[in-house]
Length: 279
Image (cartoon, rainbow, N blue to C red; front, side):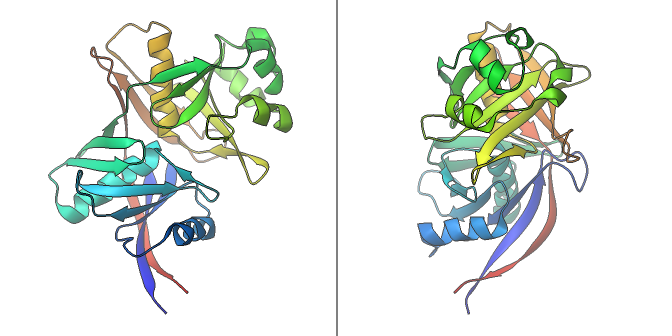
């Protein structure tokens, strides 16, 4: 029975058993789409990545949730780049060919940093409508929800106070209807400024149920796009804590330079490795 090796990482991890887990298959040559999807469903992590050679970048990477493939995701990009750098000795500079484009990643002792695609925007649902879908009032939102795309489109939702994050009680059918992106997936990133770091929750629909992600780099990149659209002064940098209400905290760095380039960063830690048997 053939076997395929993989590595288990935690990304945006301030400590060993924190952050967002990721499985990386560093040599996915010979695996077809159906097998990749079946493996991601078997491991049941938020994302699993599969690495193959690329003619235009350090490596080609495909990202799968248990249900579907994603064109871009933040913690899989950072974690995969960290492992590729370690295995290929890339001296801290890696480019990954993703369906969303080629994403550059730099790595040093402080962690990994990606530069996201320039953002695009489209209007989100009415403020009052989406507030109600979250179990909140219109006054609880600090601005209009906005769909932002720096590689994966998501609904970005500003809250008036970080304490509101613990009060979210989404109505699943209404949430799913209003948060549906161009690919038909239902996702919303709710955030608020706080000290010493901003706080956020990422909610999505998986297998018909509402789920919560531990640390969502793509959504933080899209938050950077939201801030640009809102006229944020530059350069700008902050840290974002996510997963604090799920006992699995992630710490994510977000920066926007004077040229409006959005960067997302975090620590990567290896927690295991193994082999998966294939039929």
